[in-house]
Length: 293
Image 1 (cartoon, one colour):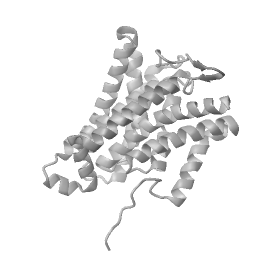
Image 2: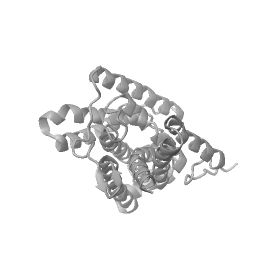
Image 3: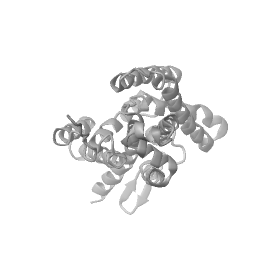
Image 4: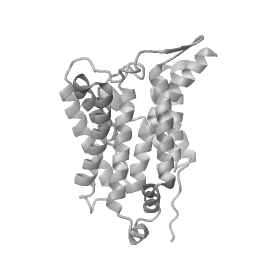
């Protein structure tokens, strides 16, 4: 029973981090209908800022700077590249973000060099919590609490703030919302900023010994890709679905690694995604668009 509980907490903690990243995917998609494949490299850039500033400013200020840098970088990608490609289709814009992802990833890997990948979770990494016979990784526990708080704040803002109402209106009907005086550029930039900030927070947990042992490296970027099936499983149009999808991915990966095989765990989340797509092409909570003919 203790092993099951440990695996469950570990999977829920990882799932919380994937939920943050998947939520970023979905927020950007709802605002612009563009799948931002650069989320992983934006997270890596935020982590790199933390790594550079930490010796000079301490962890907390460096972490805040990394989150802000990720948000600003995400807005720059939207304002400079996506917003100016007015004639490009949504598919072309998604491919554009793949190009951005490759460029950013290559530059960060070059800057990090060949030395051992640094870890970022100084206040909680590699310091487990002991509860009787159960030993819980503190990183996953802190990630779970942080994600619950942040996701609650996001849904409150999404439901009751002017920004949230405007964003939902734009997602439903962009032309009608523009006629009502909603400034699309502000809503879109805000969505990309939130998506980038979530990626900057997620990397603080991914680049740790407890989470994967990969540190700040290309491996952490690969790990961020798991957020994509999380968003697909939940539904690209559903913020709530992204959260559910994140936990499905985290728990699936942890339980298959413990009870089946470590290598199989790496593909198990994609098998779950394929099964969901067969029976629910729009994801578990996604909307099916209806077109008049």
